[in-house]
Length: 426
Image (cartoon, rainbow, N blue to C red):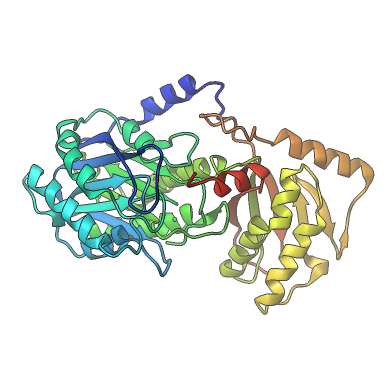
């Protein structure tokens, strides 16, 4: 059971996870600026973060959003995958640098300036941006902050980066797994515009294990598909989703399966943290679908349930309106052209069967138990700056096929989510 009672307790735990793997340093700094796109009564704050390998590495991997309006950092990142080596990542929050007239030119210029300070070409760096879509970066203010960013580099902890990349996140996220003689450490941000399909979501990972480039890319793609790509807050895929891993190789190699399992553990932990930190969240839903005809069908059913506004609002209201679960399943299956034998389909909420053999299985006592179950799984929507608990609302769907189980994590839909996003730029 993972729960905390104060921000201080949570940050102490994060600090214990955040020691950087050998061969890496990081730094953060902040700037103030006035956006060009709108009148602002006061300056806005932006954080800059830098993750730097001590030496350029040929072993790096990245996956990006499939949104067809990608930000300039995504376009740059795709090109960087062809580079022989990479040194680091420059990230900013507040503005996502998407589809602006000089977005790519501005980002490349900042990377060139950073490279000049560190003795490399700007081509040696990824960039990543998150925040408001459609605004220009405050390039001059960012350029002036780069010397301070470089001067602050330290090999101690990734926690300052985890805090600096936040936007509407309530708390920072860091996960760490020790494997062999080394470790994998990662951080991620994201609370809304979350249904990654690569996951607004940024994820940065460092390892001091030796993992060849091709193998590292296979591991990252496989693990992201089974972690970050199986969460949903609001079914909106960001224009900026990026996950990057750099390997220094300082601690030698482990068996490929060991590394893959460790990387999946880190990414699964970050994925869970993102969902339980979702904007306005009141419950985390864990939807598990078994025995579909194919894994793709199972994943489609799980996402249909997790993304249904009617399911999400019922869960938020602690209302076990289980007819909405069956409706979401049938809606997806029908529109996907999939047949379903309702007599061989079962649905359970909190371990209690509510539909089987083609009929609902409901009674007043079960209704009361399920309502109490939902209340017991609830989070305080006041968004305290630490994870309150790790309890989930468990929804299990068993179909009439033979595929392996698939899980998707989702959030409910609260009044606070609507309020936060209505006021996002205020």
